[in-house]
Length: 329
Image (cartoon, rainbow, N blue to C red):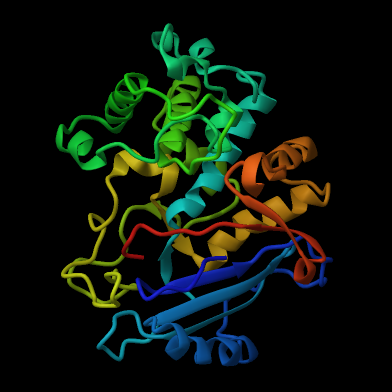
């Protein structure tokens, strides 16, 4: 679920541990009329070009709808089969990969980074734990100068190790575990751990361990659409104006991948959500039930591991949510 802003086209998914409806995800996603009628008034109210939404249970995507246009100033309609840039919603996926490493005994939630990355010995960063990275309580700042790291070029894992080296030189803003500060850098550091322990790029790991087993065939990385063509939702500036260009390169630098570069359709995003709902219900899923409990249990300020975990009456209790935004989508 994301907040509506003028910045971009928006996509929302309801996520709560609902009782099963008995329906399975439809083979072909259709634009649900009732849901569409709920979304239509929001276009003008929030001045966004388009909104796509879905209702998901443990059985998968039950209903979906899209209203509006892919690009402001055009008549090209957004559809329920379009790709959507997930931005920081990617963080829940990175946390899920870390849970797989925990299940395999390769790392523990309370392990300090120096036990996995010995080059951090005698640095403040070395004492930060895996859990603190994922809870945004590491004491790391929000970001590095990502564009400067990307400009140096080289393999993506090398770029993330450059980010690791830069982060190790920084003083922590607070003692680890003492204060919440939302940090993309923390999740890129988590990506470094994942790459070290799987011995693969984070992009290869997430394809192998999440996208493939969940049949998320549309999932990819970076900006969406064919350069110059309105074949997918277009990126927009904060005032609602279309960006000059679209396409795979119109995004945050790939070095930020573990913090937020995934894109996918509503249907495939719903497959990941349904897996977490099944896991929360104790049903068979990619991870063990205790892993979902760990992923959904908040630390400071209601932030769990890749999810904001809050109690809401409309959810019948626990609701998991997150915002996703690359400043253009």
